[in-house]
Image (cartoon, rainbow, N blue to C red; front, side, top):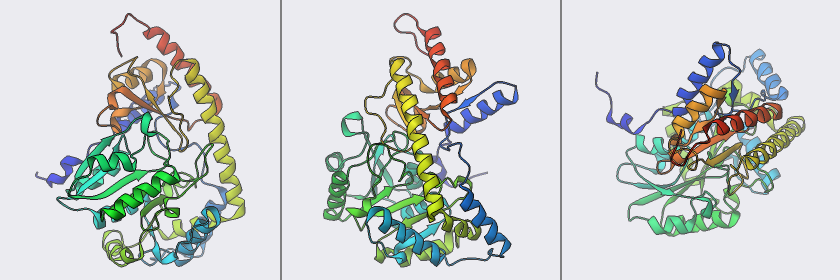
Length: 394
């Protein structure tokens, strides 16, 4: 059978292979500590579940408008005003099936064959793959601790091409957990505006920040395309609900795309999400953010003790991006060995980085503090066994 060639640009997630291996070990009776998948161990907040159940009981199961439930678009707009002091018209908000739905709409609208899209390396792989699906030319820009693990306006300007039509960044980012400052976001917005290009900002970890305030690019770049989600901060991963904030001129074509691509997001999920903005739910979400911040502290302290502390600690999300090149030049082999020998599952950097993926791993602090401490104990034991003459690697 023959399939469309565009699929050649879409790679499988290596972390899913690792997850399958971890689950197989669990089935065989091993105690596996899961630090590989980007999903905290918290359940969906009770008010959201109750609102979803009430919507189902009331028969709220018919289609909503393509751009989403008007009440939910109003609630999202009000949240931007309340939390960020940013005025966003509800008409600019398109509710989507997960952030992936928002990314798909933005990609279809902003990029096509022959267009160059700038993106950081490392980044979340779907951000690259979606651009490949529309045959856009992806120009990945290697970033490092020196640039705060972010694609800055200065770096973007250095690699800008005549056919560059879009720049995509993420703040906080996956896999590094680093944020772009308001000043850098403003500089990126000005660069894109001056070059008649689109700025796409992935903000799906917005709200999960540590030591820096939560921030939206819309404060500096009101004409940016901003992607967000109810999955990470709001704890609604399986509900598959996200949104896209777009410039007013883009709403009509995006609405047409939504009608044809997915018609509308899940109706029960949209009604459930209305409860995410209640004071009761917001208090619980802040408590969870504080729990994640404490877990971050435990993990960073343990890694420092093992000589593995990142040069720039993550400021957001729930990941630590580690350079393991002094231990191994094959992150996939390193992660397999750690799982097989100590039943600790972490993610090889090859899912995220094209240039240095084999030199890095991602650890998610999505398990409780006791499990993190146990994982650190196992990691220490693993490293001690692997201490060997120079040149040895996993």
